[in-house]
Image (cartoon, rainbow over all chains, first blue to last red):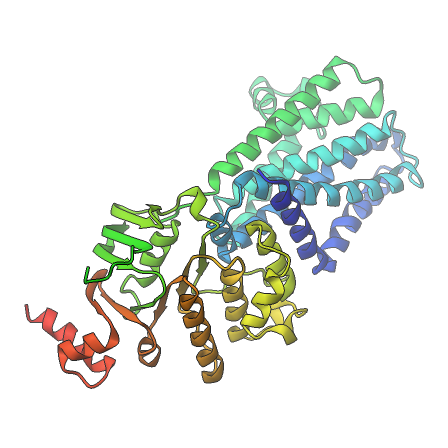
Length: 243
Length: 243
C-alpha cells in the first residue's frame, strides 16, 4: 500500500462526485427529508419517533453508500479504468482505502446534516449524539464495503440497483428496527443474528438510549469486523487478470 | 531470429488463449525488439487485442509463455514500465483531461512535469480543463494515449491508438512513436490501416489467432511480390489457404 496512491484515489472519487452536484444534493437532502416525514408520520406518538429516530440517523449512510459505491465500481469495471488501474502499480487496498476515505467523508457530512436537523428542530433525544454520528460514518464504510463486493456480481447498472432491495431491505426488516428481535420466530432471529446491520442497529439503539456498556462495544467490534471482511472480499473480486 | 543482436523486450512463446469455446490465440510466438515500432496487423477478431492484453499481463492465458523485459508478463515490477492504451478510451468521463492525467500520474508515481508533457504530446493543451464527456471521440482517444505516455515507459502497447483521428494528428503521433523508439522505447502498435503499417519498422500479421507472417514492410512486399501491403496481406492469406 502507498499513501500517495490511496490519497490520490480518494481525491479522484471526490472530484467525480463534485462533478455531479445533483447526486450530492440528493445524498445530503433525502435523509433529512425522510426524517422530517418520519417525525410527522408519528406526530401523535412521539415515543416511536424517539425510539427509531436515533438508529435511523446512523442507517441512512449505510443505504446510500451501498448504492453509490456499487454503481461507481461497476462503472469503473465497464469503462475499462479498473483494468487500466490493475495494469498499473496500484495496490488493490490503495483503491479500496481511497474509496473508503472518500465515502466516509461524504457520509460524515450527510450524517452531520441529518443529525443537526433531527436533534435540533425535530427535538430528537439522543444520549450520545457524537457516538451516533461516528456510528453513521462507520456504517457508511460498511455499506460501501458491501456495495463494492456485490458490484462484482452485477453486469449492468440495473442489476446493481436491484442488489439494494436484495441485500439491504431484508437487513432493515430483520435488524430490530421494524419489529423487536425478541418477538421474532426462532429461524428469523437466527438469520438476523447473521446479518451485519443487526449489530449496527443495536449499537445505534444503545447510543440513543443510554450508557455505552460492553454490549455496545461488542456491537461496534462485530460491525468493524464485518467491514474488514467485506473489504477483503472486495479485494478478492478485483482481478489483475481477466478472461 | 535474424542477425539481430538486440535482446527482445517482448518475447511470446507458443501463446494460447482459449475463451469459452473459441481459441482466441493459437500458438503465437513473436519477439519485439527495442528502438523499433512494431505494427500488429490483422482483421478484427484476429486476436490483436487479446495478444496485447497478454503482454500487458491482464489476460488470463491457457498456455505458452509471455516475457517482458526478461520477466513473466504481469509481474508486479513490470507494472510501472509498461504503458498500455486500450482500444476503448479507459478514462474517467466525469473528470477533466488534467484531473484524469493527474490521478494516473500519482498512481504511477510519475514526476510533476509528466502531466503537462503528456498533454502537449497529444496536442490537448487547449482542452486540458475540459470534462472528458464533452470531448469528441478522437480527443478522448488522445487522453487515453496521454495516460499511457505519462511515465515514459520502456514498453508501450497501443491498441489502435489513432482510430478516428485526422490525418495531420495521425502523422504527428506516428512521428512521436518513432521519436520514442529512437529514445530506446519498445512500441507495439496495432492498426488496421495499411498506410500506418507502412510506417512501422516491423510488422506482425495476425489471422485467426495465428501469426501469418512477420518482417519489415519491404520484406513482406518482396516475399509476395505485391505492390503494396494490402496486396501482400491478401497473397499471404491465399498462400496459407492453399496449403
